[in-house]
Amino acid sequence: MRKSKLRPSRRTPRRSKSATGAGAQVRSGTRVRTAASLTELPPTSQLVTLQDWLQFAVSVYDQAKVALGQVATTAHDEALYLLLRTLDWPLDSDERVLVRRIEPAQRIALRRVLEKRVIERTPAAYLTQEAWLGEHRFYVDERVIIPRSYFLEHLASDQIDTLLAAPARVRRVVDVCTGSGCLAILLAHHFPKARVDAIELSPEALAVARINVDAHRLERRVKLHLSDVFDAVPPPEGGYDVVLSNPPYEPSAVCDGLPVEFKKEPRLALDGGPDGLVIIRKLLRQARERLAPDGIVLIEVGGLQAAMNREFAHLQPLWLPSIDGSDCVCAIRAERLLASRA
Image 1 (tube, rainbow, N blue to C red):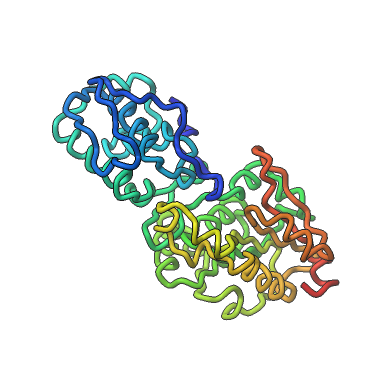
Image 2: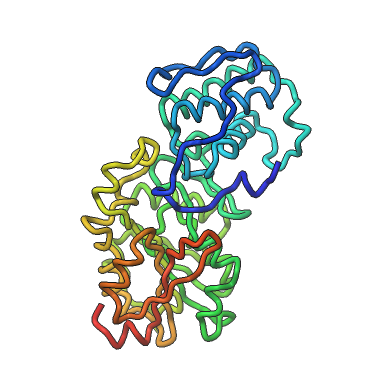
């Protein structure tokens, strides 16, 4: 089994999809019920090995039309992750783990976690209270959106470094709408000499961010701020080299129609107002007086590329290419922001 598949990292709610192509039968031959009548799990007494449970889990994911995208993009990968975590078996186990027998007490635990995931539609990350971005683990619970961001890809590929005049000399960076603190922590790891401000409007989310900052032992370099964008955060001396944000960008109508799993995340972290641009407009207005002369603003905007290009054409947003072609992170240089009215 592929370890990397157990730690997906895309923030793509609108690309969420139910599992397809999954087997419809488990070892016992019991066929799961259709989504319309799947209000409890079929019998599991004849499931003996992890392979049996994995096949069963994928089947019920498929039949229940479980929404994916918060932890993994396929039913197989999310179910495997959830089963391994429930059993407290290593995520990087090889294929031999699939033939291990499941003990009676373990069967009870597996059935309970699948009931919460499939019947109650609780996101898998809230069940395990963790999320992964690359090799970095973060604590999460219902107070924060589940971390999934293209910034991981762009930091790892050094695309962001190519936009900076001197990436090795970056000293001040900020993560706006930090949520769990995950991106602020990634920035601290990527720019080891930088001080990082992490800004969040929700006190509940900021409490989770504190847990993660402490867990990563970055309390001396990452400072948490309770603020609506930059309202309570004055401009730093010399300005920020990097202003980064994965803000709420979904239009309100899109949030209204999200699958149940996504509605269990804090709406404050998803809803970007009628057109999705409310927070982004404020961020760009306030960033003008906070950027270093050669700094950059980086914003992840989901499916709002066309809207951004229309409204902020004068800022000449540069779209960073992503592996899957989404290209939903834009960079805006300080020289354009300072010369224009956002």
